[in-house]
Amino acid sequence: MANKALVGIKVGMTQVWDEDNRVLPVTVLRVTPNRVVQIKTTERDGYTALQVTYGNRDAAKLNRPEAGHFAAGGVDTGDRLVELRLDDVDGYEVGQEITVESLADLGHVDVTAVSKGKGFAGVMKRHGFKGQRASHGAHKVHRKPGAIGQCATPSRVFKGKKMPGRMGNQKTTMLNLEIVQADVERDLLLVRGSVPGGRGATVLIRDAVKGAR
Image (cartoon, rainbow, N blue to C red):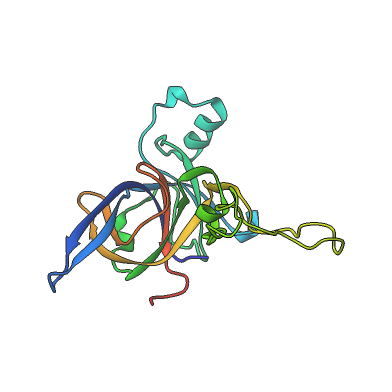
């Protein structure tokens, strides 16, 4: 798990220059203040986590259980509820706002989001297969995977075999992304490299669990 975590929105990609005048590709993440709605502890819930919300939403558009949940903590209604699993929740309280400043002193972070959906894809696009040869009797099999198993033994295809199927649209984590800049005034976090998901995707940012490279 993590010691610090936040929820943000992917804005898009751009580039900045470092002190050595080198171009760095960065992803811009908008991290509006996260408001703590509920604190989960090991004694009561069996694990430690923070339930947070961000943004603003009209309370009249919520159903009664959702509205009651926000009202119980005295927290303004937000766009959605997200749970952040943390090692320790001491020092947090309901209604507290967590800003991007809490991540500014970290050198690297892990970013989790749902990747872009690519639809149904073949083995060459999905798994990087080479494909069949283009000559010597090959007929309309240039992008097919070839043999996928044995004959009488074991008379089946093993589970997990790399085959055509739906590509993308799954939870993906990028590890050890370097924090290039943290703009507290504009609630922006710039991390080096790419981040899963499209523009407007919800991303979970936490301190790097494996440490810096």
